[in-house]
Image (cartoon, rainbow, N blue to C red; front, side, top):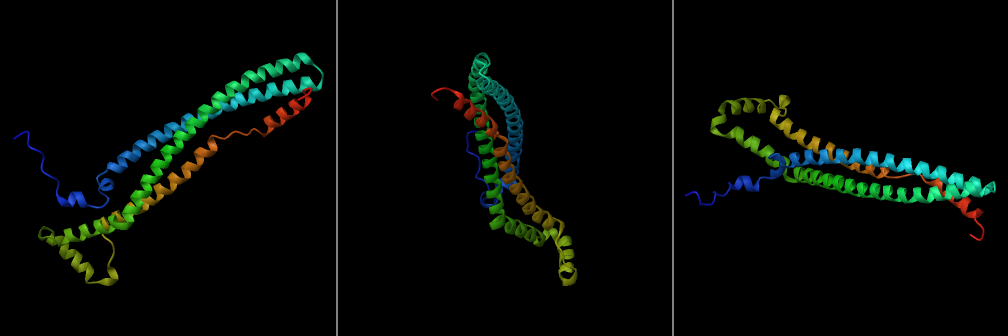
Length: 216
């Protein structure tokens, strides 16, 4: 009957530890995260360059205002002040975009880092041991007699015992998860530094200019 519900999945498929990791579901999600994070990184870099451009222009206009006021050149001072006011509004908009992009990027990298950390924790708690047990159980199945004989021979000589290729691959999974988790945490710090601007010089010019305004 085409309308009949599909049979339930085997219990082993439901209960298998780290199923989302081993099925490739999480790695596929991580690839999407990485693509999105890379795009945000490039966009954030471009937006910071734009904000720095307007910030530099604002600084020049503020300097024009201050120098005009200090030299009693009212025309120069008015021109600098008028330009600086317009540039300040533009810079505020560009910085708002920069802050918004930083928030989005931080959320993405945080989500990514959290998922990888969760996967690593699950792997350490139960996944690694469960997969190793599956490998050892498979060796004991009747169809694996040849492999079982070779394994038994290896076990009979303790001095020569080593991990099989499958077991080495299992150990590699934990190492890879640890590296990815560490790199994700490091990348989060990079985004925070990218969205910052140095404004000490600009603030100093504003203070100088205000001090020259009568009754300020």
